[in-house]
Image (cartoon, rainbow, N blue to C red; front, side):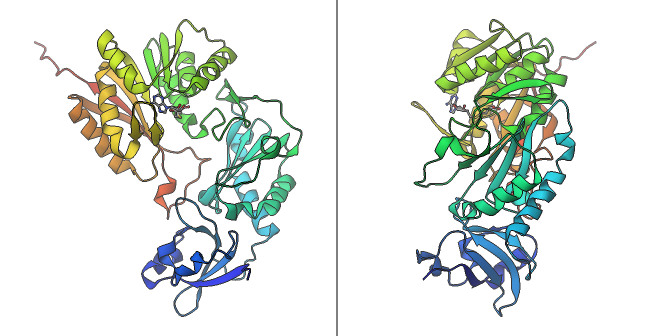
Length: 409
Ligand code: SAH
């Protein structure tokens, strides 16, 4: 039997959450959840959630992600989940980004941010005329036709592409090309006046993390002039480009992936930066720490933006567990009064916990510190207040104080 609409009861103890805007559906909240062991329930099935007496609470869709088993779509009983529903959500989201569309210095940003814009499991980014849709479950993917149709009706576009960010056997044809004119990659984009290359045809990471836009600008405008800057886990060198553009004396970018070398070179070239003052090193960050210790290298500023989880030949890194140690190592290679830009993007670590980790790291690294500023997600990465995990990004600009002040006479 195929279900398309399923009525499910929420446990009393989880009711308040769902009455109060909580968007994520998790298995434990549902009474009789063994029903999901029945593989005939297809992802994309709409779930009518009620209290124990059968009073309507919300409509959700069934879609399996690591976070849960679906997302709430509506809290209005009569609201139909149809083409118009999706179009309205898209329209509202796009309207909120009008200022970014009109910003002459930036043409890449997030247009639709999952649960922050009312549909978990779906993000849409804009890159200089082209749209990239990310589907995070088979469930949300089942609404593809309506969502793409809605998007096409609202915006003008050069191209629309998609990425399936869930396990599936489907083959993305033409690198996920859906509509418009196929792109000859890279797409060149502008962010606060600087240029970057993005590729939709090379894995899930396209070349730039749009959520760090304001951090990059801050680094360029307020922290780089005359400094000797190290960028760890540098990927395509986006932080290094902004540092160099801000007048850094030199930059060093360290990333393990071979691919990062040519991508970083490409971005330096696009911005007319020379490769003598902007060094790129393909190397494990943990080995690079050892190298710095041996050579007694120190930097005026270190940018530390690791992935939440990484495995290399020699090390396994999990931000949850290892961040303090990583930061402590970074402190060692930062000059007295130098700056560390410490970034963390684990959704399970909130700002308070992150600040505790910073304290722990400075204990380990035997230095004092002052937090100069903290950045979180930019406005286009809308968050859902009832779901704090959606506010995952924390970036602290930290001044490293290694020597106690000498008393002046
Ligand atoms: N800071 C980057 C994004 C980092 S993405 C930016 O702002 O654009 C994570 C990067 O960490 C990837 O490029 C990956 O190759 C790299 N990486 C993972 N483990 C590593 C390790 N042990 N040493 C160096 N780089 C590593």
